[in-house]
Image 1 (tube, rainbow, N blue to C red):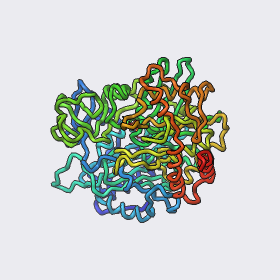
Image 2 (cartoon, rainbow, N blue to C red):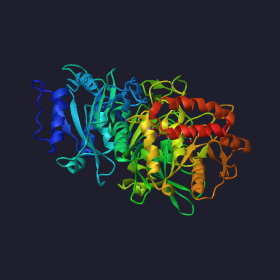
Image 3 (tube, rainbow, N blue to C red):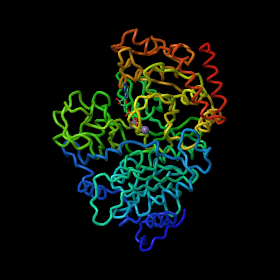
Image 4 (cartoon, rainbow, N blue to C red):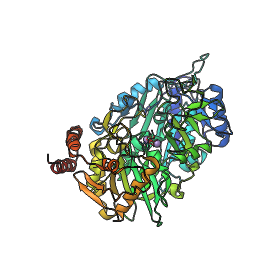
Length: 611
Ligand code: GTP
Ligand code: MN
Ligand code: MN
């Protein structure tokens, strides 16, 4: 990077709590460019948290919740234009455009740097620049995955303290020369002298930019989590997926859970569903079937690499949960409710109750008689709009989850038995399908489709392909990504590879209702998955893979007619023949970069469908 010398902007770093030369040089360079009034090196202490949250309360960004309801917790409202990830403004700036592939926005890295440098010039004036040393995954790893975020947002700073291992101990572990991913973030709202601040500073112009070759992230203009907590999507998925390609591992948009069967056997399962399609729910599942137990390891991101024993091990690099709030309640996800009840959380764009607690649609059946909605307006059950934004979130420490698995902090991760892919489809896709083999499973993942949700800006409810639930997060060419997945399986011992399944909790009946009750009942599908792997459950071979026979799925005690069950499991050849052209069109986007094995899988599917 170039050095930006601005007259009068020299920042004294003599008191900096590190002698890491590359870090110091970068902090100085960014300070000279962005011109903050102060630089604060985050130590991650309770005192620091209290000072920052107090400051945010004074600024009007946060409201302290009633400590008897939610101790040490806060309600945040964003600017109404800054509520979700902005995929249109997200760029993979690889040197070669072909390396970004057809699924990413691309800009030349030098042009992008020049444009963003002008945006960053003076962008932190009047504000404090926070230096946040963090580590994705345990610090005890053989190669800890360090990052440092520079941000002018105290909201981002407190959120990063929840979402990642951060602070003085991380900086110390970095020593003088550890490698780290530089993550630069500015809300893009300099405070000129005399100008009154707003509760949620941001800028109409937004850029979420990854430089894959340099392993560097620049984010500008947005304070919303996925755009601003740079350890999460930007580092742990977009940049990490590139590292993973180069080094032979996988960085995936997956939950990790531990499933214990009544007879005591343990299976670890990873599952990729697109945003707002049920990862956090499944990760904290309370199975309704007796004797089955789920424990949580991660709800959003899995880094997976082969161990010396030939098995695929998964690790959650995060330290907190950033979960979709609406729909989370005692009935659907009691463990998430217990996690947030312990406090120490930030709730963004939900509603505030009159007694200083939070509420959102789906938390309880009946809404409170009066609320303050996410826009700060008085709300009652007759109000036309929802009280919470559909992409409102809870941000809470994962260590507070009452069913966290003790292995969550093991740097080796856990050996995965099964990988589930799933999306939100009203038709066509059965409740669960088992892939014939790894490559067929990669085909299922590569053709994964889902109806869009509020988690990203744009139209809701449109079917789009979302390969491995990674469409917005693959940091390189999607065709190369599929080839990497296939190669990972080819180089491995086939017996030890996880089995791959495709699930769909969202199929609808003719009246538009969900056919499958979902949530805690999804434990029945996990049971079938385990029994398939143990050779105990029957399946029907269909053109798309192995689907449960009606008898093989445990529906004891479930209010589901034989007809409804059949509809959940149905593979309608007519619907599938209609699905094929969309898959072919999707594959064509990747041109010569699409592995021929995936075309062969599609040919096989067509042949089985009589096409
Ligand atoms: P991100 O955190 O954005 O990556 O999404 P996620 O995959 O973690 O989504 P989450 O678990 O928060 O699911 C959000 C939405 O899915 C909510 O509206 C839930 O009510 C709904 N949902 C989750 N599980 C089920 C299910 O089994 N059946 C049905 N019908 N809805 C579900
Ligand atoms: Mn996610
Ligand atoms: Mn989630």
